[in-house]
Image (cartoon, rainbow, N blue to C red; front, top):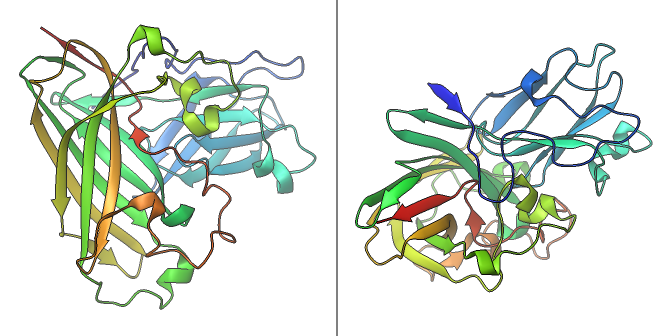
Length: 316
């Protein structure tokens, strides 16, 4: 499998520094940092000797979920961290200038950081990962996904497969969910957001952890997302031992009605329980306690819908 880097429009994504470095630290060196999948829900991010400044506090941020993990680098400038995510989704590696590791994950901004992102191409498929939260931020999810191309002609078929894994919170998994699930039905919506150069929002605000602009996704003002396909499935697996839900969406649609241009694929999910109306994943209360406090602080920070970490083009 050949690993290649995607170059996105307007913003770098070649895993290069995107902030000015401070006087005290050398920017993390992405050439010495590797991301490896540990299991369905977690990755290992390892920096070899010299990848970061020695003995500095290192924070890794999943740009989709805003989850953070921290560690102190060794004297030789190496480090190792595990974090929720999928190996080909974007992560930040940064220095955390806080008093102690106990407060590392609460840092609101970073002076020195790089974005790690790689796509994987094999047999004409591009593999990528996205993720977010459901139920007011209680249930994180990842989608191990593929798309058949990044460049299309009008009338060609765009094919996306998304393999979802939801991590059910231990509070729910310890007896809250029955061994036999209710009748769940999942709905997935795939759309395209046009990147009109006249509507690009300048990337000059420090809100990269929430809207992902500094990971390479330029947002558009008053964006009109074009829904290209909706799919539904009731084939859902619940692993009570691991505490995960898993299912798959497959999208196949001809690009007939869209004009030529550059687009960001966007996704949104919905859930129906026991035949009830579909409700967006993020706002669904089936897995949520009364109220929205107590388990995670990320519950109000996720955009809807979720953007893919790359653009596609449609030509004649």
